[in-house]
Length: 383
Image 1 (tube, rainbow, N blue to C red):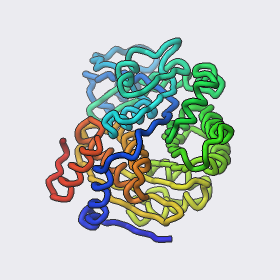
Image 2 (image 1 turned 45 degrees about the vertical axis):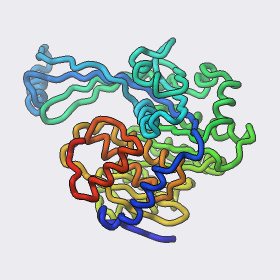
Image 3 (image 1 turned 120 degrees about the vertical axis):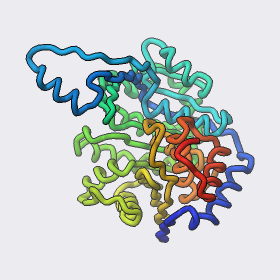
Image 4 (image 1 turned 90 degrees about the vertical axis):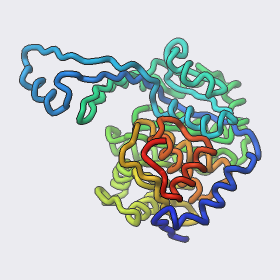
């Protein structure tokens, strides 16, 4: 197996030329598939006085046992959750030329208007499995505090999915699917059962092995005990026998998963060690590809070997929430278009690099333009 580390954009020149040609070619088909299974409403509040976390913390501590009141400004609500952000990004990458069905916690008993407005035009169908989870984000000049009410996440179950969609409609979706994107296992206690049952159902429907690309992102799973992680790992082998699987981690998550197998990679961020970590994880996890993405590049390990591709680093991101979801959508889009391991993570890097500079998900055309500017040395922190 090969082990390739590209140090910079110049070293990627031959890869980029082929990558851009592949993206500009006509797609062989209009892809369809499923994304799921979470849903959040994010409420943003800016503290005005005191404006910093450091000052606010001290004042709250001093007021313990009595009461306190502080001026704040409600900045509004946004749709959130890894799945909704992923689905929206995937649609935008294909400029709408893809059929995405989203299944998740989008409200009860109906899809909430905030999700309908955000996803209605970007998806073929929306199915809601229950109440959306709620996050209140307290923003300060020196950071943010996320207050998460995730009680609704327990409503996302295999039983609720079957009840909501119906067996016949689900089977029709699966028969036509070329991809399944399953994200945010960390916050959905029953997601593992859903992931397994979808793959099992594909087999029972006679869908050919490896026809469906199955992308999985655990998201933040620090709160899940080791027993849960081990139980999930046991599910991945059967999923991989039916589907072409990609398991994606950010760097922190990769460090944490390596600990399950006794790997000690905490704190190591250099490209060579990230590539080594990625290969280490794949040697212990029964999936076709493992991807690890720090904020300045990404590595992919598969049966073909391991590759590390640098990213278009941004010193001053316009936005960071959603960058990982855009990265994953870029990887899925490139994999569907037939890219190799290098092209898959290059697309992920371009998708996230464009998003953090503009606040908008990239199209394939946007990715090519970003690559041109990056190679020319003219890529700025804003697009």
